[in-house]
Image 1: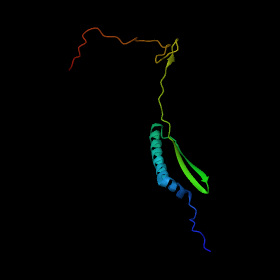
Image 2 (image 1 turned 30 degrees about the vertical axis):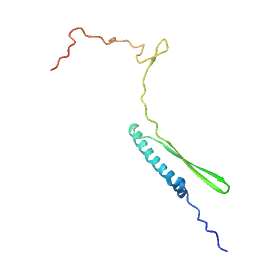
Image 3 (image 1 turned 120 degrees about the vertical axis):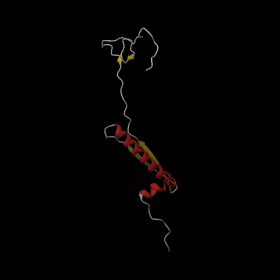
Image 4 (image 1 turned 90 degrees about the horizontal axis):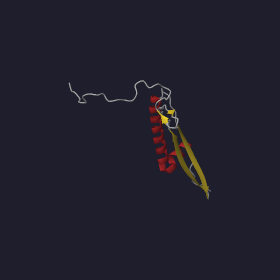
Length: 121
């Protein structure tokens, strides 16, 4: 009696490469390349430090002796550094960029009397 022709088991890398006929592996490679670029850019803006991650999820479903394998990729890129704006609360609960406790030395901009013609050299 001969043994049935059964392929040997595949390695994890072979399974990843076979998911969605290779599209999953291509998507994963592109995600890695994009993440590395994002980390490099963020590190340049943050004193040489940045971090990110890639989470790979593999789903397995057994249906009448046949396994269905599905993959998912989630990328967490570095957060972009954002500047801050200072503001103060007014008595009527609005925000203003002017500190109400600071003396205003020059007042509002004003028009200078005289000729408004622009002279060219």
